[in-house]
Amino acid sequence: MTDNKKISLKSCFAITAILIVLVMTVLDVTLVNVALPVMADAFGMTDSAIVWVVTIYQLLITMLLLPVSAYGDIHSYRRSFLVGVAVFTVSSVLCAFSSNFTMIVVSRGFQGVGAACVMGVNIALTRRIYPREILGRGIALNSMVIAIATAAGPTIAGAILSVASWHWLFLINLPFGIIAFIIGYRLLPENPKPAVRRKFDYISAVGNMVVFGSVFFAFGNFSRGGDRLLSVVLLVVGAVVAIFYVRRQRKAEVPMFPVDLFRLRLYSLSILTSVSSFIAQSLAMISLPFLFLGSLGFSEIETGFLMTPWPLVTMMVAPLSARFVEQHNPGRVAAAGMAVYSLGVISFLFLSADGVGLQDVVWRMAVCGLGFGMFQTPNNIVMVMATPFERSGSAGGMQSTARLIGQTLGATAVTLVFSTGGSVGGNVCTCLVCAAIFGVTAGVFSLSRRITAG
Image (cartoon, rainbow, N blue to C red):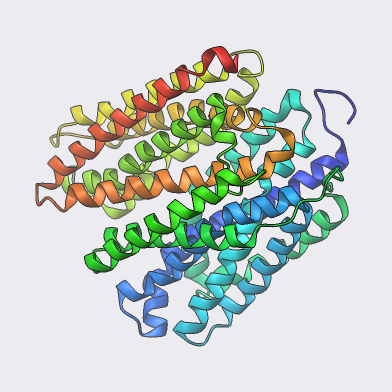
């Protein structure tokens, strides 16, 4: 490091390796979502069955995030990252050459394992590379790259599918994976040697996988309209195993599920803030296309365009908010962001189906993106900085898990609202009101951190 406001060229390249793989893992979700109808035809599968290509990927990530993070804390964030890059890249090739449905699902499962290895330690590695004074810029850069990948995903998928087969959606990962592995192998830092070497808790790892796997599968199955009895059984299994799992974590000196970190008021409030915010985000992001298509009469192409301003503005605001919170209270900035977001969501309730133009929707989406951009980076900074340095892996893993929990609960809530049988407009309004409520709740949680986080 040259000083506390700069990072070295070597560190810049190390960060580049992390960002390349983040783009790969995020893009893989959006690219495959767009290609699902094409893949269903290619494998002769129904629409409900082909969804497994997406489900297995997300499920494995959720199940493995905390075990991988704990492994990184004990052994090596660098090793976890490199294993993840290798597994993700090799499984991408396997996906591309899959000749049947079973092979593509299994290969996607391995992709999920690789993605979890990377996601579970990327914040910990970022924390080791950036000086504390400008860590927010590193976290903001992560958020910005994720927003760019999310926004660009459908366009990239459409461009590839217009000139090549779906196989190339996976093959494009190969050169980037190789580059990221080489850079990471040469430049990523190792963990400092601990005074006492701890052992990895395999029993807790299995317990974590059962709890999160059964619960998240149950929520996903319910939201897809699957067997309700199966969902209930899985939730019961998850709840029973969770009781024993949490008891074991309370007795552990360094638990895999970070119950010790939850004793820190600032950290626990940050997790609650994160979950509430992503519930709010999912409620709006999933329901708004129904408003645009069903009530306001926009076309599919126009709806895709109208969904773009949100991640685009979030991408632009994230690095600015990172610099702003270097001198200002991040808890208050995040709370202000959630207030702006909630106002943006509420503004959609005042749209009339008569004479609505694209510009009427664009500025409202931009306000939502502005608020979420103001919120996301400061909240992530507080969450990371509230934890001891040696627990960076667990903190980062729990941060990603909180996001997945919020997104899953938000998606399930939308399903519940739309299953009531009401009109499309009425259902969307209900979702938007709930989104605003959860946004305000996240703001209140964030504001309550102002004394500690200042």
